[in-house]
Amino acid sequence: MHLRSVALSPEDRVRMAERLLDSLQDSSLAHIEAAWDEEIERRVEACERGEVRTYEAKDVFAEARRIAP
Image (cartoon, rainbow, N blue to C red; front, side, top):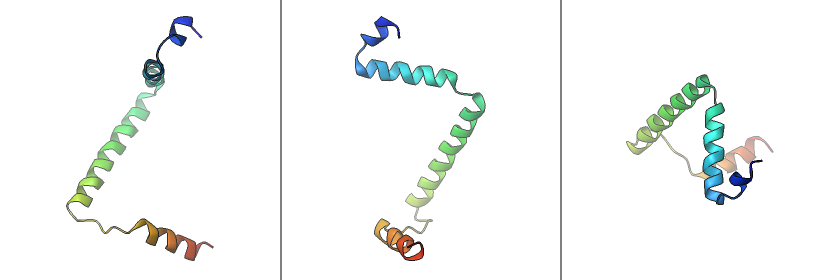
């Protein structure tokens, strides 16, 4: 490890690590992530417009315990 990088603040080291990881990311993965970002945005907007039926977490977990003991 380069000594100057160790001297950075924890926040700066995190930013540097993220940039290094991003530089290794395959462009096809970036395309997939972008598609998921769009899908997430579409789903959130649908929820906000009331177009999606939602369930309380406690009910979901109760049903999961019921069907998969």
